Image 1 (tube, helix red, strand yellow):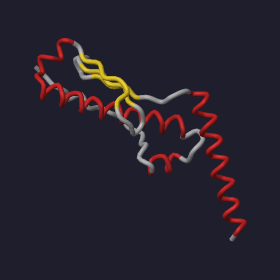
Image 2 (image 1 turned 180 degrees about the vertical axis):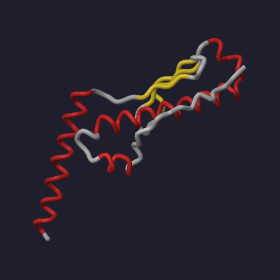
Image 3 (image 1 turned 30 degrees about the vertical axis):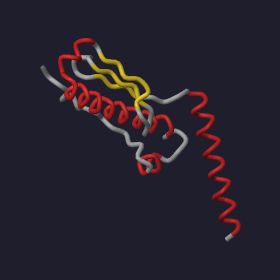
Image 4 (image 1 turned 45 degrees about the horizontal axis):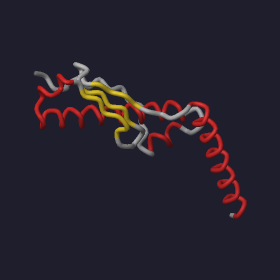
Length: 117
């Protein structure tokens, strides 16, 4: 039993080292999404809050509730993009099934149903 625990611990350290080295080389992983008209753009990190939100003057036509809803929709799309990019990046050093189980799924985001005037 001790040998199994030691092998598992060694494997965890090896994967941790490989991930650390890979992330150091590739830099931070972010996702980006914009509304169909480009009025709202969000940059997000995997599983995290938006790190940047940009709104154009034309986005104010949406009104406060419409703009808030559009920011939330685009932010979710950016988060999914970041999760997918993290999955693609780390699947070189970590089993892709493990990444999916952790919530970092590959996605094809065809959602272009944003706010329309």
